[in-house]
Length: 306
Image (cartoon, rainbow, N blue to C red):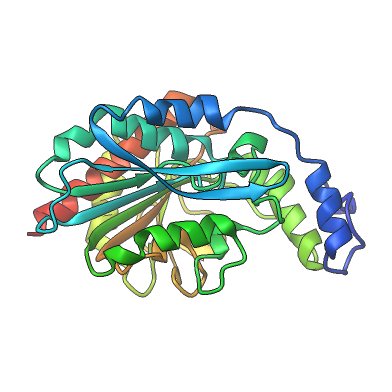
């Protein structure tokens, strides 16, 4: 989007109200099927895992059941690992990578972890290839008390009983060209602030927690992902998406204070993956494989710490 071109919804400099949000929602169209691409693959896992519905989104006239997959032989003496995908519904490899991990590798951790995996937290957004939910709210800024996002509130309720038990949480995301062409301009318009163009990093990177950075953990994940796809370099300012690069392919955010999904537990080891699916150097399958490599590296590193 040309920054000189006003966003097609709302008045520049004025935050959206109910009418503008309704207009934005009316423009969102279904482009793929949550039922076919997510729910049906989850149901096929029932022979080996417990599948539970942990909530339901109500966006009239649509309703979306929310599913999580967990280890069948749950053992409270084992550490718990949480894997989340599709917090931003448009980030395809986060969803499909979580499902691929379940199919191909989750069984390898039987007797070593209790696994809890929520592959698609935002199915309304998944179907519309959209970052926000139907209320024009970003679920990945909404993991806090009195959350305005149904998606975030449901996941928080799911994991609340596990307080103190989660050793590792990896949240699977993407950074796409559409962040710059569509989603950042929409955010600026919604909030009534000027749109400030930024670049899109070419490659995979991680977002750690600035209050619990675990640098060796982050680097262990980067090392494994680098075997699958390329790692994003720092820009000319030594940054990735406006944040200082603290190690190759790693930046840090204030995860809990920002309401990010990676802060939904008090896990010792947490990270957010960012795959770049629009790179000419990466295929969709490589993107899924990178997510799987990140999950495996995170789980293996945390286990190795004793």
